[in-house]
Length: 264
Image (cartoon, rainbow, N blue to C red; front, side, top):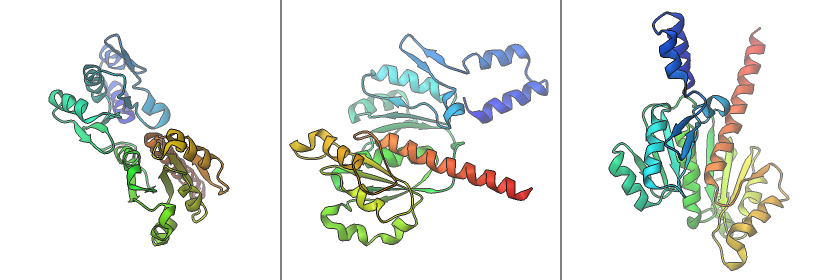
């Protein structure tokens, strides 16, 4: 449930504009709401974590995704479904005309208004190669739908390190950096040795046979000698964006708390 909507409901009760029975009807699905017999929507997740629940597309039928999205749209200004292939997106768009599909990121979204969880700071997203773009775009679109500004820097891998070095000024200005890389996955280590902000490594399943579907870059990132690197799972652009957002939100919360102390 949207915190602003909940606050307005409570104010309406205190003003006598809504009776307790009506309020109870609106609040009965505060924690979760069943959708038929196959899903339970966690409306309370935004209040707990700062981000609403997101739909994982694979394994669900188009009909199930449609029902879940329509249910969530009644409570949240932004509804996301990830890993949606183009053929499935066409079926969803036929039933939900306002749906937006991001084909490279494979994300479907419904956006009824401005997000209520915007914050300051920029999430910079880098890819080692063009083949890493689907994962990087998943991170970028996720961050944008969550209300964060993004900066993209594609195809700057270590095989041509001069491409990365030509953007030193942009790297120095970054608040959080997501680095998406396959093959041997060396790019996060190089970036982390150049910047003073958190770096989130995202290994991708791009590579020849001995990359083992992304295991090789995953191990490289986990064993990095550079400090300040956190690593998410293989191809997990979504998880990287949420982690970057949490970092920025925490920094803003600390800054706000310190400002309040200084004003006393």
